Image (cartoon, rainbow, N blue to C red):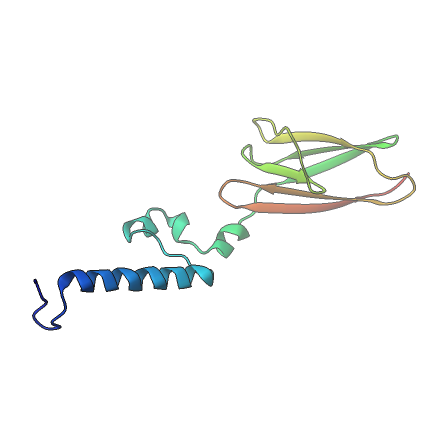
Length: 137
């Protein structure tokens, strides 16, 4: 057989044990939440990929808001990035126009101050959250 001159092991056995070692190490790392890139080249393709997740999430989107009380209805208007997903009180707004503007009509509970939480997030992970408290009439 083809044996390694220093270790005396067959080359196939050494490759198999290296493979097992890499697989076990990778599985252990994945179980504790670590991740490794598939290749060294893929780890640094863009500067954004090399940034820690906390830094990417720390960037904020523009999020401008206004509201008008019309009787029992709140007309909420806003503007953000055109590619953002916007949620109001945990529910996604179905339409954000091409210029980033959106409008939503809400009906608050009578006699109470009505809190509104608006969150916008884009594909890169940039997030903005605003809270409004609309007084009751």
